Image 1 (cartoon, rainbow, N blue to C red):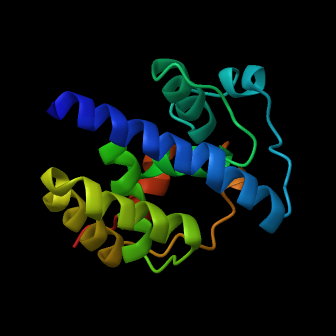
Image 2 (image 1 turned 90 degrees about the vertical axis):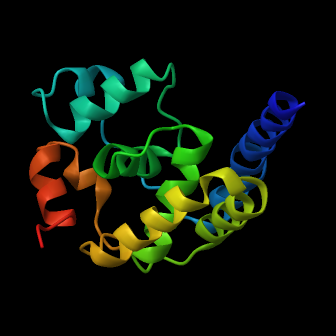
Length: 159
């Protein structure tokens, strides 16, 4: 029974993000073309955001989706997996980091109402976002050739 509920929850999250949010984003946001192909990302030095991005996508059996490239870069920089819990944690981090948008709020609310077993992780992600450098105005496409570890030191300064 619980496995069936988790499957429904996963399918609902995918539906909300890919079938509802993506069409809305296409209307609201002016698409900035992603300046790299998958082949170009593979040619980048190890440890760069671009190389880490393409490796993460391959590991998760995903591919670059238009309008999701910035989101996927956030997964690389913040270290949250592309699981349901990871998706909500990423958005909780962004909320704590001061980024308020429809996708952030919708995902956080969905997680809070359907994933009570992950509340502690969501709270930690929110608090981590509050204590981290504000990244909501960063140009994520410009970060592709940068080294992931160096950017993470900026995002998560040592206390």
